[in-house]
Length: 327
Image 1 (cartoon, rainbow, N blue to C red):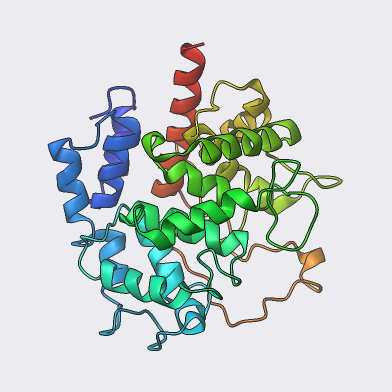
Image 2 (image 1 turned 180 degrees about the vertical axis):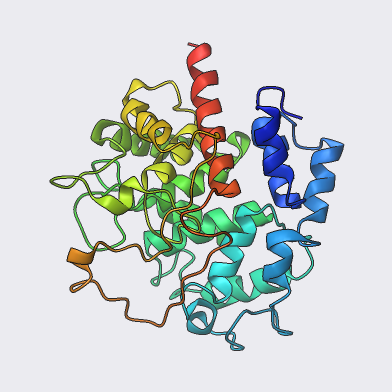
């Protein structure tokens, strides 16, 4: 199917018969363009079986997950199983507004976060939520919706002077706040305004100049582990995936993170899933408190070979290899 994957690894990836896995394999490792018949068939089948089907099977009749209300809080809490979080995962899995159940849930989120005080460019916006939302809605097929356009513009205008972003009041950015760049990476190049392109350039330089493995004194263990879902947390694979999607795979400043990725690869060519979020070091757990109820969520078993992370890692390495071959 891809031509450059070991047959045993490709068979393992496809053994689940999950349309989401096949879609990523074709699109990110198989060079299938948008509109390719087999690729489009995979997208249509997302939700019919596999991980996306399991999520959609638990959707409430009103379109939500877990909490039946339609307010912003009910759609967000509890972390990481309420409507906001389920839609984020579905958008990663290749679901679109055409997937049964998705458009109804997405419209609930858009309505709840719209308006002057909402999180889609209003007073309630902050980069972690707004960036995630813009990426999610773009992938689900709402890129032209004025509420999503406004969210993207808000992210551009809230970039720090150093090129980064921060989810809390700050004069400088942090690599822990990756959601704006990830939102821009979901936009096709043809949809990126000159302001977005400039924000991407400055944001990428912020990450590349500071490194993707950490910015604290000494290593920060959670950033050196690979997770899924990532929710709003950062790790080195999030940084690699975002920057290579944006076309910076040839930059040699990625090398330490690429080397770390290769060091985590198992002999059979797979990558294991790290701890579920919130992945907090023991020494920080005393001071770290999530103020709202939360339930860890996973598609796969922690500590075991992960198809989703393996696909991400292979796609990153392929983008790096191709970008460097072209320079």
